[in-house]
Amino acid sequence: MGSFYPIFSLLIVTLLPNYSTSQTLTVEKSVATLPYLSCGVASVYDGDDNIFIFGGYDGVALYSDKILKYSISADNLTIVSQFPWGVGFGAVLAGRTNTSYFYIGGEDDRFKMRRDSSEIFEFNSETNAVAVVGYLPYPQFAPGAVKTDRNTGLIVLAGEWFEESGVNEILKFDMETFTLTTVGGLLADLMYFSTIRDPVTGNVWVFGVEQSSEKAITSVVVSTVLGSHRTEPEPMARFGSGLYGEPNRTETFITGSVPPVEKYNPSTNLSEVWYLNFPQIERLVSLTSDGLSCYLIGGYAQENNNETILQFNPLTHSFTSISVLGLPKNSNSIFFTSSVYARKLNRIYVIGGYLMDFADPENIHAADEILWMDLSPLQN
Image 1: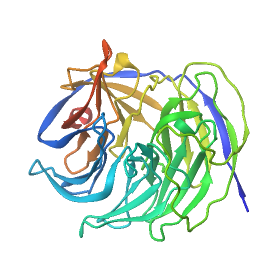
Image 2: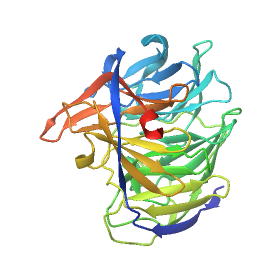
Image 3: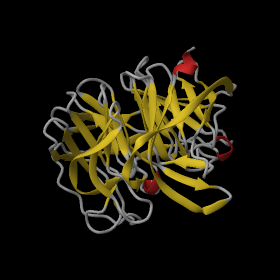
């Protein structure tokens, strides 16, 4: 029997000014490089000296089954574990302890074809064990995932290849019992999207590529059935079709090219869609936070891509364009990269990704570099 989950909505249209700053960040290259060209890796900082890097796709045919540990102090990489098959474009959550990490969804090559994944893996960094602990209700390329408290994460399933079937859910993931509960869905009609939690307010922000530049969903009610004990789904080809349930939707149409940015409050289940004076997002951006500001790296409008990152203030809803020296010079765009903030060093690390030259769109390739930038100039 299905249940209805009301999603309270608020549409806010505002054109806040964007700012540029005179401060400039400088990108440094780590000596260590990934053992393979890779985009779509997922990475997580352990709070101390290590960054764990999960899977990845070489941009041509191969997925990595490796879990790597990058030591910041030693500037080296070690293969510490592996998945039972190659994976990429998944999301990662830090678990209840400092040795538990969850890798969620994405793509894999388990059945010798490129397919979307529904598996939830747990990796134990103490024992290096990897195990499947659950399944998403639907396979999902590039899901969103954020940790909301010690025991709970939120997983976002929406957009991209599921536009016609209407899959659009926010799931609560209990990291102790491994159970999933549907609590809502996105209001904005997004395709590729990235999520981040603002630690000051606890709100979850979603930045993404709009399915249509002339439509935004401003209120939705999702009806779904989700069992706590789900059997493994049938394999599905990467570009295969299928019906995964249909929500009841109430839609309001607006026109305009300003991209939506969605704010979701996990405590109240209130979603707000903000139309800000924000660069158009064209591909998957990478998001990280220093605890006060959120940083967007790659994936937004090409004229801004080459030598900037964006700093977003979740309290004022404004953003600042920050000049960056040393980003890859052989491309105009970097996207499908992974970034993490290493608090102890006040650095952002950028790992792998796709590089593309807009003058030669065929010149697109994955990267093996680990880059970092010190944020201190922004705080002086």
